[in-house]
Image 1: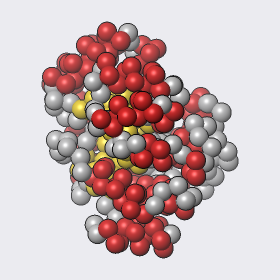
Image 2: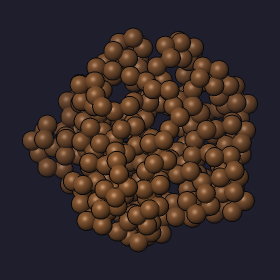
Image 3: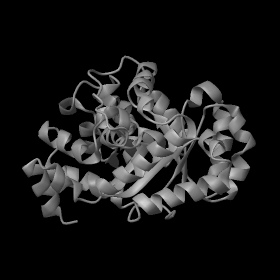
Length: 316
């Protein structure tokens, strides 16, 4: 990718030109990472996007069930269709570096790690063969996860853990033990922080768990001290602008906290989170931030490079 092509695509406000630009998506939930258009084509129907921001995560999940999953086959077949859509979207939007996240229940639904790996690797090769794939294992739903971690880690397939619902399931001591186990297995440490919680909570968990990356992290923009700490330790924030707007974390692209996070020297990336719900591709995310006047072309180019210049071990 040339810098001039990237800048030209933004100035032209061209989706097609932006789609030709190599990009990264480091925060995408696998079963929600495809496009609405893909499901529309499969089901031969039209699906209206959400009409307004969601009042809660529960309302968001209800919208997904009532507007997306209802058009997919039931059970495992529908799940695999949505995974197929995620890989297809990566290829269509020239996502060169992709981190999709999966839970242990998704592994179990496909019959365990061997059949799960076989299916995911087949779909990546079929739909996104030119994409470097770095799968995340989400943790934090139930302590039943601990019973299968050693087996899952032994396959060396997942590139990172991504801790969610951390405060509802595990103590900080238990989380530290979990993170040490993951790090001993060569995994990147990520956690969902600073989306709905405050900056002090973000700082506490980032420091005690020795995180490499934070999913969202936008609450840090409320604390200069914490932003300086994140910048000093080069902790990457994988930010999802449209998700933040649709879940009421911020009001608009023009006021999104990525501006101040970037100005403090924190490595930030731009990502989609749940594209099937929020209906904004990576190309559109870049255009939103540019067209709103929040970010300049050179700044967005640097952010794009931050995502592409990763230091992960390639997973195929």
